[in-house]
Image (cartoon, rainbow, N blue to C red; front, side, top):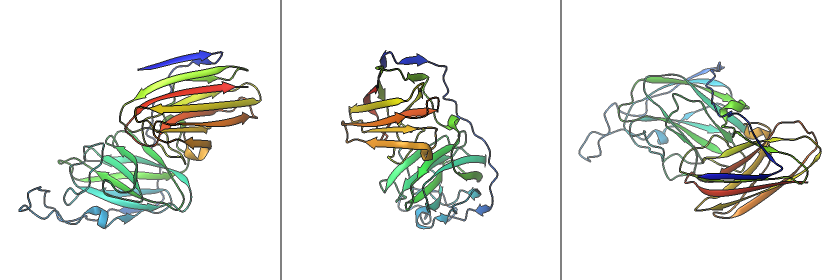
Length: 301
């Protein structure tokens, strides 16, 4: 359920939320090694040994555009919240030398793929999960890597997953169509206001940034026409922990400012638009993935 009320401040546009899966040419190729024995996983202790966890032997991923060639082997050790990962997995480790957006695009895969990215952890319950998507083969994925943090990039599959896979890793800005842009436009008008409320269910979002935000999100375009200020505030309820972000594109690197609140709390940000006509986007995101309700209020000088 959602509702919108605007005073001197809303106009609709056609939806821009389609996502594309461009292929990128990598600069070098890294081969994924074996993760254990070829025996099938068996929850019975008397069953075959599934081999060591792939989390115990990650493959280092370089900080440069690369094509990764991997394969599934061994047993099922690691699981995530988005499911379809009851089969073997392969784990890659990326240490961010600088803050950047990272995009993953599948080239080939013999089976459906689940992608998980965990900051400073690997197994379920460790670190902070920034990505869990079980449609990786069908859709490109991206996240914002923070300088100094280590990320486990886990390619997983269901119990029937087998064979080889190949995907590109690209550093730098993802294109705008890799974020789901809302069809409601915030219109800058002197004394105007934009009010919006939305209920989110559990799920993965498409926008990431330095304040975090793996959960479902809304990314509103802002149409600016004069030099002036904006004040935005967001409040969460029903377990929602808001993140508010102002940016010029999908990329976390395009973020101008962001703010984060406590669970069921509120936060705000202000910005002075000096270059009217520039593309701006106001994003309501969340710290977790459980969802909840938020209300957004935007005011213009």
